[in-house]
Image (cartoon, rainbow, N blue to C red; front, side, top):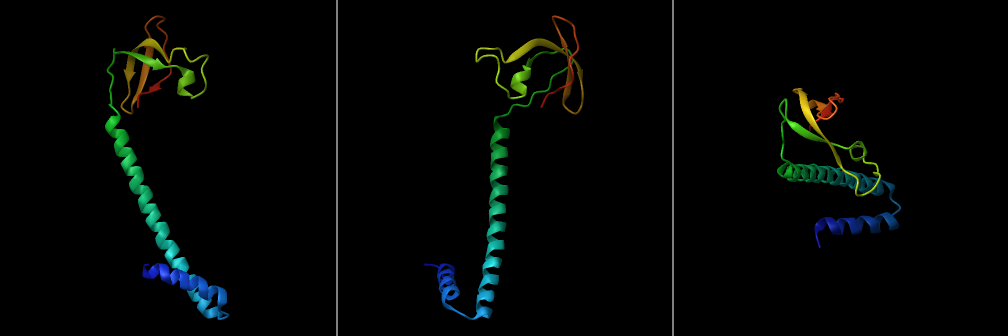
Length: 125
């Protein structure tokens, strides 16, 4: 058993059977200091975990940049908004579309190849 574990048991024992308020308040302050250390350690672990998850995700993602004139497919609106579709056999993509304009911030403006209509800007990230 570690020293910290023994001191916690001793603290609980003293807190239950002592009538000295000064020692109780001292032990409470020690517990609060230990709590701050535990919170800081948990926060460091959480930051490290998020960093590892982001690295794993970034390894699997293939970034693609489209040029003007490329033919692309667009995700259907109900898939993009994460609502249930008409059926599980419904198409998840619509198109083809041609890229009309490319913006530096990752947005594309698409034109329907069949109808020639212009769509709203699409986020390509």
